[in-house]
Image (cartoon, rainbow, N blue to C red; front, side, top):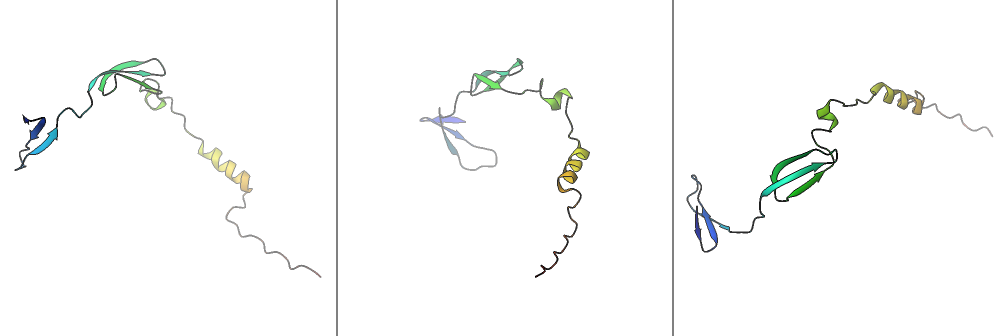
Length: 99
């Protein structure tokens, strides 16, 4: 890479011509501290020096093993109760009105 008048010229091995990239247009990539809602902090690199998150790997149910599974049978029972077992059955035809 060579710098010419504020541009960096980049040539890849498979590329025969150069591509001009502007200098100093990208944000600064700095060390940052990530703070979780549970109080856990860790260091990483980002464009922001401080990052706040609600859930991290220390408190997320998937990583802690406290995953709660939904009771599928309970859902079926709730559905049957709502439709009282009539869902999918043919409706009765109405009798003609008597005059």
